[in-house]
Length: 149
Image 1 (cartoon, one colour):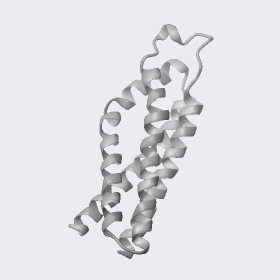
Image 2 (image 1 turned 135 degrees about the vertical axis):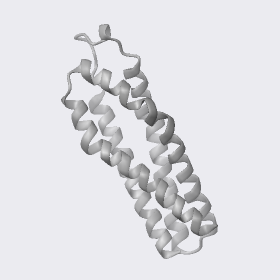
Image 3 (image 1 turned 90 degrees about the horizontal axis):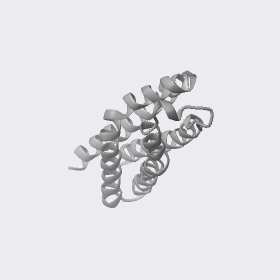
Image 4 (image 1 turned 90 degrees about the vertical axis):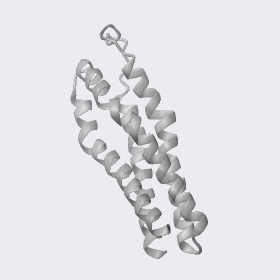
């Protein structure tokens, strides 16, 4: 069971870190370069399926790290535990920072994009980078714990 859970958590944390990294280096710069009208339309399209799947992958990976932390001893226990904190950070930043911005953008209509429109892209990017770093650290810590187990 531990071996299966180890593979699952490595896949989960790797998937989260990889997707967030890819978004950070390719999608975010493209969104920032767009006009506000194109940005809002594109943002609405990009989040349709991602928002439904990634919370479960993050939560599942966090739970798997937690189970492995409880079962492990010595340094792997500390590494799995630290990975739990990192992956919980991904979830917390996502749900309290990025998701509320996503909801505001999805509710934005063409008439809202006038001179008073406050561009959420810089703030979204900054929070996205925080959660990407948390995910990369969580994946790295998980991998180190699996290797040492």
